[in-house]
Image (cartoon, rainbow, N blue to C red; front, side, top):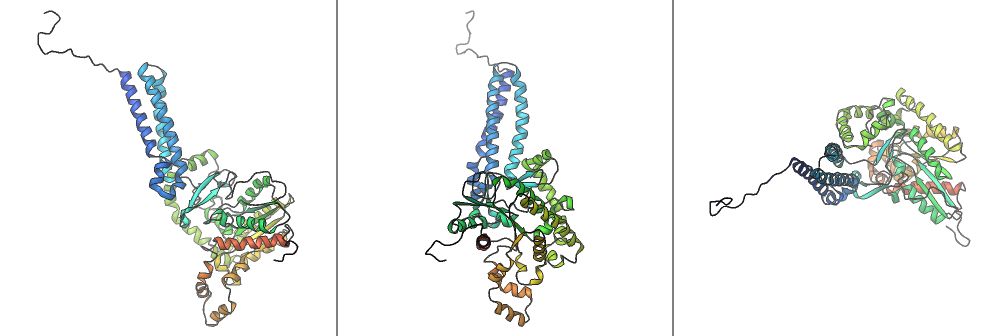
Length: 461
């Protein structure tokens, strides 16, 4: 009976032994599985189901998280296999990947909550457009329409850097009005001007109106944008000027006492490394969101002091407004000279606030700009009169209302429906407003013989 169990129903008992290496490998493999599972939950495909049209604003950060999670997860799976086989370097590498990968993935996940704005940090001019980027116009109530930034950082279609033979190129410099805030590219005056040139210019074979406008740009930023854009060999440069160009730097620019807070979501910092950390990481965007809460009241106070309405009425009397003009006008001179020293004609485009259209007494800023441009030998297209004629298209009615004792505010309110035909807020144009600007520029180019707009023989326009 030796070597056999005395119990009739006994079975051999298997000896189960799990080594520490197997446990370590299983632990790392579990983490890898969780990371890979998170990639299945956080990605553009799932985001499209949860965010609908707004997925366009988050697709890049969602894709970024997905790629990082897949990379970290696959690396950990491979390391888990190495750990189970034999002791060695895989243990230390796995710990490093878990720690660093966890930090990166946590940051990338935060970024999927905040997203990245249309702009990115620029050490020289605070910020610029994020190249090859698409964002919705959801903030303007158009979630299905998009602002598309090309590879050069312009709200424009793609075009080559080298100018093709026979092409006429106009460069549009300016802020959000020039860029086309709230409208798609095809609705901007740059695009509409191209259409007019294609149809009416007989001298050139192709036309490119380069839209280099960027939201919120001030004159010093536009000067740099102009210099950077000269590589595209423009034949003429148009500088768009909106009335808030006088006051906005004092509201947001830290160097001028501003809060450093504006709607671009790009914090001011002189250090490129800190600029990247503060604006391109999830933690940085979280810190910005927290900091913004404490600056809102300060921002509102600065806006009240440096309001456009105050500037329009007190450009010659307010010390603060005189200071603003004394800073701005030399910058405008430098901008003009940046074009003229290279032999490129430059034209100033003046864009009004809609409340300036009714009364001439609100147009002191236009007169200051026109006088300064004349001193610098720069032509001006002041769009104020054109929009005033379109909005207040019945002078007799305006005089009748004045005769009835109506105030300017009441007369303006009576014409509000006319204003909305061309403006969607106080200073930004809708498609029809951009069409007006495009026609004014086209007429200038034709009148100054930059193009040949004469109709073919036998045809009269």
